[in-house]
Structure formats: C-alpha cells, structure tokens
Length: 181
Image 1 (tube, one colour):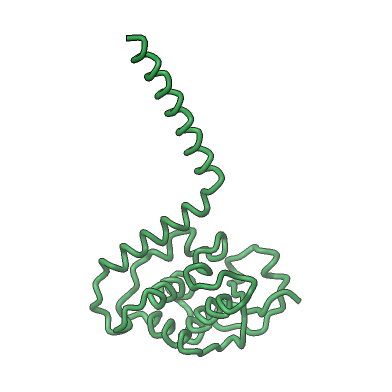
Image 2 (image 1 turned 90 degrees about the vertical axis):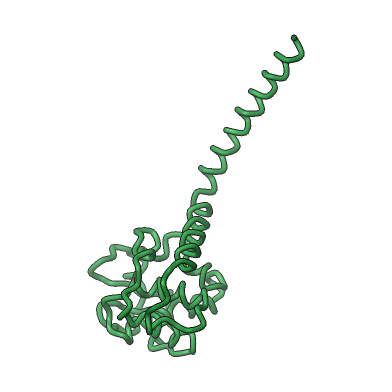
C-alpha cells in the first residue's frame, strides 16, 4: 500500500514538471509554434482546395501556391505589375543573405507580412484573380522592382524603418525599396 502512495506522488511530480516544460516552450517558442501552425493549416487547405480555377498553375507547386497566397493577401487589389512586384520581393529576399533562403521561410518570418498575421493569407483566392499568374511570372524571373527587398503601402503602415528606406519605385499603392542606405 505504501509503495502505491509513493508512485502516485512521483507521478504527480512528473506531471507538474511536464506542465512547467510545456509552459516554458509555449512562452519561449510561441512564434515558431505559430509559424508551424500557419504552414500546417495552409498545407491542409491547399490539399483540399478545389482546382477548378483556370488561373491556377497546372503543376500545383506548393511554392507557387504559397507565393500566390502572399500576393493575394498583400496585393490582390493592386495592378497586375504590382502583384508580380510583390512576388519578386519575396524571391529577392530568398536570394538575399539577410533573409531566410526559402519562400516559406521568407513568408512565415515573424512580423514581416501583415497578411500572414491578420489572416488575409488564408482568404480563398477568387477564381478570376491573377495572383497565380503573377506568382508564376515572378518565379520565372520577372522583377519589375529591379531587386527590391521591401514594399509597403504608406496609407497602411506606421513602420518607421520602412519610411527610412529610399523608395526606388511606386506601383499602384505600394512603394518598393532596395534596403538600407
């Protein structure tokens, strides 16, 4: 009987320790967990999404899908050239040593794109949208920004860092910049 009570106490201690470990992980790795959940949710959504749109690429490339979702979230109301430009910025970041070296890494990098944080990244893409075509064009090497690493809408951002960058061009409502001076 005494042995049983001791093992219950040990189990209770292990359980409490386990809860503290979970709390530590959730506090210190919240951004990484959130990024993983976005990727998992979007992967599931892409797998179940209807492919009836004629603008969707036949290959069904996961990277094209991610890029199209980012373009849709950030630039769906912009002119086609602006959509390609937003896609090009993502690809320019992939090539830069200042950013992650994958499309997913750039898109899910913490606090970089408001559409990932506010859920616009997950909005269904209108079948008439040009975002898939814009993503494919950007992935084929088209870059109307000539190497820009940043874009922003001055009517929607208050980020002082973005305003400190020299604007190289404006397309639609977005300003594009190469980087720090």
